[in-house]
Image 1 (tube, helix red, strand yellow):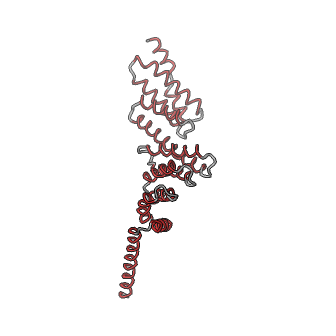
Image 2 (cartoon, rainbow, N blue to C red; image 1 turned 180 degrees about the horizontal axis):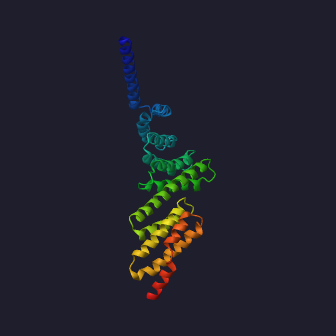
Image 3 (cartoon, helix red, strand yellow; image 1 turned 45 degrees about the vertical axis):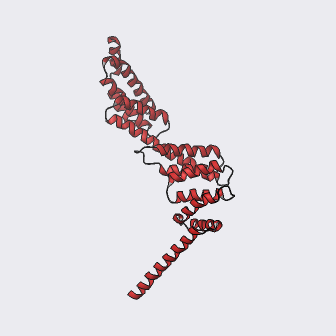
Length: 269
């Protein structure tokens, strides 16, 4: 049994060494077309780490030829398959600009946005790549309005926008929890105005209203009148928008006597 195992192990090692020697021969071969054929073969077999350096070399060797575009596209796809999405996006964008009439140009534009989409982090982190992905995907939609990928593009954009909505809402809620009420009012306003159909609209209006009231309470006398008026406006907007909400009753108790407060401040001013 042990003898069979050793024979099997030697076979694996021999095969591996043979494959390694074969790859070295490809790398050292002066035959450019042979290298291209082997690079494509490696790529199609999913051996992207072998294909990548070959296509990297072929970029220079095929520059200005009919195969230059195909080599560059394979090169970009190798970066993508190796999960280097930032580098892949760069190469796809450069490919699209360099070869605007190539059959793969439409797909290259899509891949720019998709690679940046894959780099988009969770909502709690910096959203630079989320914005990049949305801009790139929107560019694709503008360039190819009849593309069969348009539905997928719109779904990706919606997913990215939802992430930005959550980011904006979480930031506003953080201001609220830290009792930075002026910043909270502005931030919740941004959520409501920037994302009018957001699922967080009721929450945003509610916390904005409470924040506006607390801000007025804590303000110096010279600023209280204007801020109480603004908080009352926010309260009315919430009640008009969500009259059946349990929070409407809660806010009604908070704002009980607000008109008298405003009247008294007007008399004092």
